[in-house]
Length: 369
Ligand SMILES: Nc1ncnc2c1ncn2[C@@H]1O[C@H](COP(=O)(O)OP(=O)(O)OP(=O)(O)O)[C@@H](O)[C@H]1O
Ligand SMILES: [Mg+2]
Image 1 (cartoon, rainbow, N blue to C red):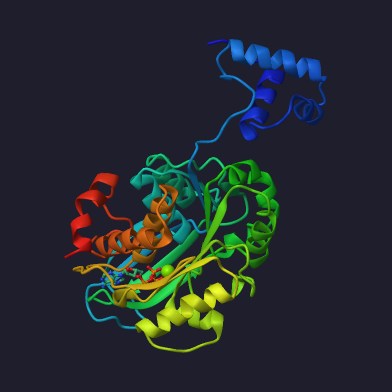
Image 2: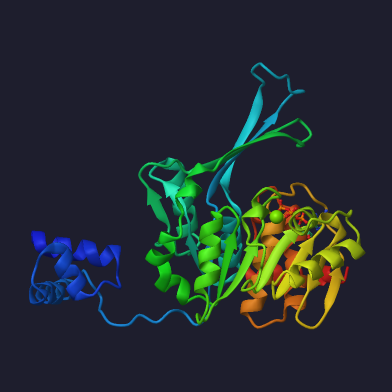
């Protein structure tokens, strides 16, 4: 293979960092004449380092997931936990984070998916990105921080699997400010749906909603947790679809009420009144309320034999978005969402270990079981 000259290498590095960079922009950055950059690009095409230039059209239907990339660690104590001392335990680790889980589910279902997040320049970050690349997810827009650590979540479980303590190191997401939206904008603007989780800072979420005006994508958001739901703007206008569990919805709306059909329906309608076009409110085994554009329904949970609840909510979101992208209405889409959620509770991993479009299809009969 031909060796690259120093200037050629510098031009190639810039094209890799930003395939949308114009020749003048590259020339200015490198202190070269524009004609010199043009000549280097011709050479790079000749030598096979660049395939072509011009306008790259996005896939017709694409999802972008933006938010948490987390390395989850679970430790299950072998005997009753004793505080203040060392307890023998079994340890497991797996990639997690709501947006990351949603992206993985979407890709396994066959939706073209990009994942935009921030990881540290460390082994957990590389492990998460490798795992996602292997599933065909575009992670080129995920930022690598030089100063922050990849987010980690450690769960301490008792011998029966019940959570005793959770520890979350999520400081890196504070670095995901609105300026990152500028950097990745061509990717966002080309999406059919952008899914965002509330691991992102409030000003980044607000900036995305504000910039949506005139863009072709629609926005779906998940609250993640009761504290993080406060990162949403009070006025949900501009959000096409909001996902919350009932506790999060109650916290956002300042209401109370246990998990029953009337409360879930009222909460979903409340989120619509707050400005969201459509809303899905989940209540674990009690099902989900879906407030669509013309109707509000409560769908019972699909019967399951749960072994691990982790990731059920994320699977519900992913299958709902997958079906919306395929053209279903929100109520039909959410029905498939609750099916994948139930299936995911039966898998020990947070994304179902056997997931594919075919797997989902062969389980459709369980909707009527
Ligand atoms: N025991 C169960 N049987 C069948 N489906 C379930 C069960 N528990 C949860 N689900 C499904 O998972 C969906 C999401 O669960 P849940 O309401 O607990 O969300 P969440 O509290 O946001 O959970 P997560 O922590 O996963 O985000 C439910 O709406 C339901 O469809
Ligand atoms: Mg949830």
